[in-house]
Length: 205
Ligand SMILES: C[S@@+](CC[C@H](N)C(=O)[O-])C[C@H]1O[C@@H](n2cnc3c(N)ncnc32)[C@H](O)[C@@H]1O
Image 1 (cartoon, rainbow, N blue to C red):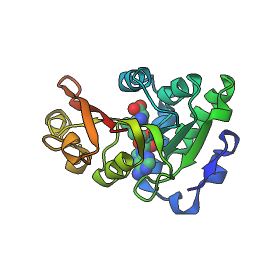
Image 2 (tube, rainbow, N blue to C red; image 1 turned 90 degrees about the vertical axis):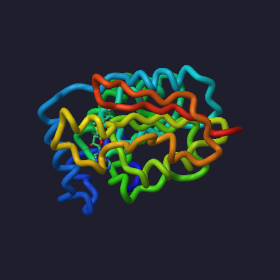
Image 3 (cartoon, rainbow, N blue to C red; image 1 turned 60 degrees about the horizontal axis):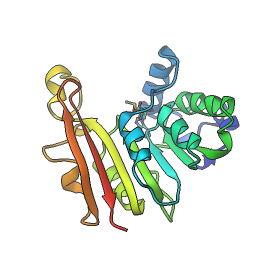
Image 4 (spheres, rainbow, N blue to C red; image 1 turned 135 degrees about the vertical axis):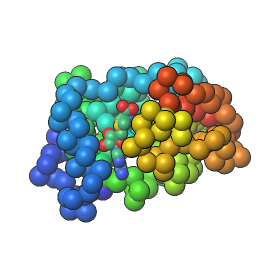
């Protein structure tokens, strides 16, 4: 669960507690079948263009994140957390290729057990992952004046994807309804074509 340098993310460095982790095995296989980076997420692009306080960016369930690379290219220190060393290794390799590796810290961890470190982050980003407890910790990790940006499937997505577990889906009004009072919703919008909902919220300064 310790941060690792981009050079050291490899199958040999997998933390012992993740060796048989089903999410790790599943996502490593998926990424193995689909080379390339995840494109910059529009929510990340918007968040980075909004005013942000000084501070780093936390990208949760980052995958091989184009958004993390965009944030680093904008001069932000980025911490990318993911259970898959295939994803992190790919992100680290691309960061190195772009000369951004000194700005990106890769953390291989199960978000169920991982805790953000103080003092927090100017932007906490998470797209393509949902867990209420992780969301609560993420909201608490936003610096005063900073942003929380999240996107996940809604329950509607299960109509087209019946295999999608209910616990991976946002309930009505979530995630805005779960925000602590210090956060103001700037946007919460559904995209019916994808079955996803995006939230952008600012923590009061
Ligand atoms: C749908 S992908 C989203 C990747 C990226 N954020 C994006 O928007 O393209 C979900 C990501 O969550 C990661 N993930 C799944 N379960 C996880 C867990 N328990 N802890 C940490 N990461 C996890 C996967 O490895 C994968 O990279």
